[in-house]
View 1 (tube, rainbow, N blue to C red):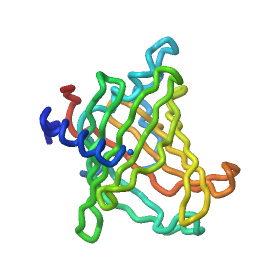
View 2: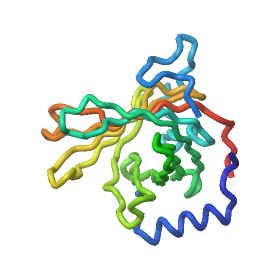
View 3: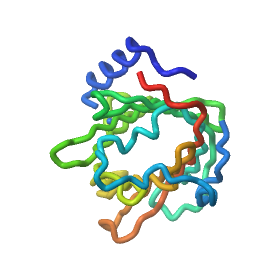
View 4: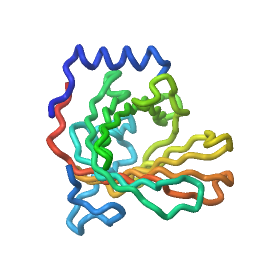
Amino acid sequence: MTLPSSMERRALLCALAGVGVAGASATAIGAAPAANAVPAHTRNPAADPMHDFDEFFGTWHVRHRRLRERLAGSTDWIEFEGSQMMWPVLGGAGNVTDNVFNLNDGTVQRGVTLRAFDRKTQQWSIWWLAGNDPTRLDVPVVGGFERGTGAFYADDSFKGRPIKVRFLWKNITHDTRQWEQAFSGDAGKSWETNWIAAFTRAEPARHP
């Protein structure tokens, strides 16, 4: 898989602006990184946080594990494969991810992630745009990286009830990483992790 051409990237960004903008893994989901893995985000505190996502650029195989029902006490998980391609925009102060989900019933779904770094707050905002709901942009989660883990939060709603949303990036090395999504229905007192994705690099990053 190759990164989009300049024309394709411009078309994607124009589409996002129009709505107002949001392979099998070699690592088991939820498993700790290998003992010899080198963390990619043990960042020097003096380093520029605008580059926090630079290690993520490129193409990835993804193994997804998602709760069948959220905030319903479910313990039934669905597993499926996917892929992801990510590249920088805004001169490095933002990035875009094209996500492909290969569901077990044979259908394919897509979604776009847009991230932007705010120099004033020194934080990232992350928007999600689902391909099957292209006129609705999710509330952005906001946060950053500390000691190798990225944590991002938002106040949102789910089935008419107020919730908090949390994204975590963890177990990060140059060639593997893990993402988790969790919801809280009690203002952050407790969290239910409802989606876990394990990433394995498919090819080296090639910056446009």
